[in-house]
Length: 209
Image (cartoon, rainbow, N blue to C red; front, side, top):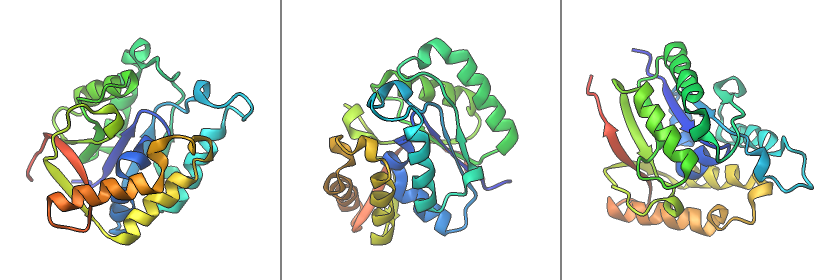
């Protein structure tokens, strides 16, 4: 088995927002981790900024987390239009499955309300249906989220997550990038399992080896 981990992010900042602490921890543990972001959200960027702003920001965030640049895979599907490109996205996911042969896949919760997140979650499950899959949390998009699996974090992992999110200067106006919110959610999830900090996941499929 490869031991590889693949994080599927609809947009450039979703991996860090949902599980930046766990990414930092897994990389620290020398796990071979890849992150694939399917949209650089050019249409969502302030018109005064270059349209490749989020590409530059995700690369800076990857450096903070310790993710090698060649483990960062970027696609350029139009934001809020994933459903129109469903088959192409599925085919890219199948290519990733064949290329990386990951053992664990992280993707948006099946209960995520954002249209792009829903599409990537559905097609991700389709592409990796025989593998272990965990759904990550983005509370502002989740009316329902089943906290079935937890990743215990230390202070250094939470701090890395905050530092990575601060690389997204173009998104600094969004409430969920606020360091107090990031730390507060990590504390809340930690309380659920009697730990100081944690990130939570839904178990979509788990294969014991």
